[in-house]
Amino acid sequence: MKELANSFAQLAAIIMLLVTLAVSTAAISQWAGVDGSSAAAQIMERATPLSASAR
Image 1: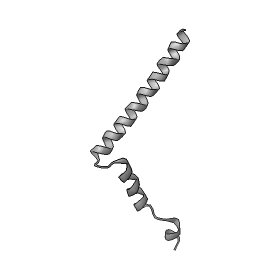
Image 2: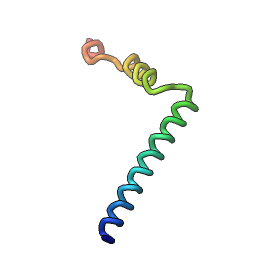
Image 3: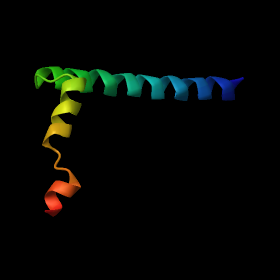
Image 4: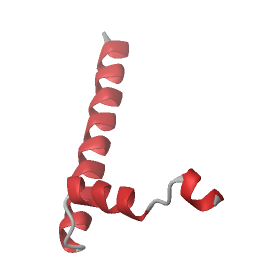
């Protein structure tokens, strides 16, 4: 029974860590004035296609 409690505690700690990372990432993105979809779009716009850079 104690092993089950330990594994549940580990699972809860991992979930809390993931939630903390998600919230902090969202907060940083909002502070930077970017949402996730537009950030991905900006990265794709800035990326130079390999064929264009080879010319």
